[in-house]
Image (cartoon, rainbow, N blue to C red):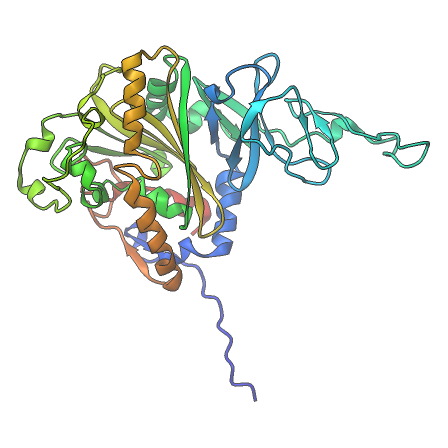
Length: 417
């Protein structure tokens, strides 16, 4: 008699407490992850793919990602922007190996099928064979063997793509509040690429997505933020969910005196290090109020990006899933074509605030990579989200998890959980 009892998979059911609890299995279940890709990345959504300054002139290209699928942004000879899958229509070979460059066409390195920058198949070697032998059938139709082409929308200097013909217009998908904040950064002046950082984080993409919606941790875990008064719990701060949790934005008014204040809240912030010094004080003291509103903040556009402004550092964080327990982060730093020397220098200096080794983001990827094996090892554990209550309303405080609860309210509806 066989005494072995095979473990049966348990039904994936959301906890009765609702969005104030999150089941740990959502970070490690491969079926959940596969469904997320189909619903959120390949479905009726607009995916950010890049900035127009990354394809700055005709006949240029830049590689990007939508979910796990590699894509190519191109600007053709007429200046029109296209997004196509980075996958040859012949045998599925990776078409483009370089991250960016100039080209008049795209040629597969495997069998040399050649495509226009719009994605149309132009030609292939030995179409009619050699000496009357081999070759493609007479009814082979090049027009039916193009690259997979995506719908494209351009807003200011930002480029978006979708697989679905049913995705609503970009303006409706983003909504008025996000459009206002996006236009503030990318639509007023032509953009200039400052540079990139890239890193791979050994955690499920949602852990980073939550982290970007979690002001509660910011002044506790990041000594730089609280010590230099960039963000503190006793400062001005606003957390605003949008479109029933799909997107969100946060903002605060820059206060140069915040670092010098003491309060009941600051006394609880153990991350304040009075001995911490910075040699180049321009990183935290020099600010050009280029938008004339004194605002610092960020906004998150589902499913993949956080757009952030720290002083004069402008950056897009692009989250690229790489499996159930891994994601890549691409940090794209940008400015404006007419930046003067002072602002250009500040953008470079203050870009050290963020990125893989950033003064205020170094700890995030480390703590999340340590979380992943813990949540994988306890899939039926529950994550507690009660800071700031149980609701999903906007709040004027950093001491809240309302943005994460709002996200999971949206996530559950979309995923049918």
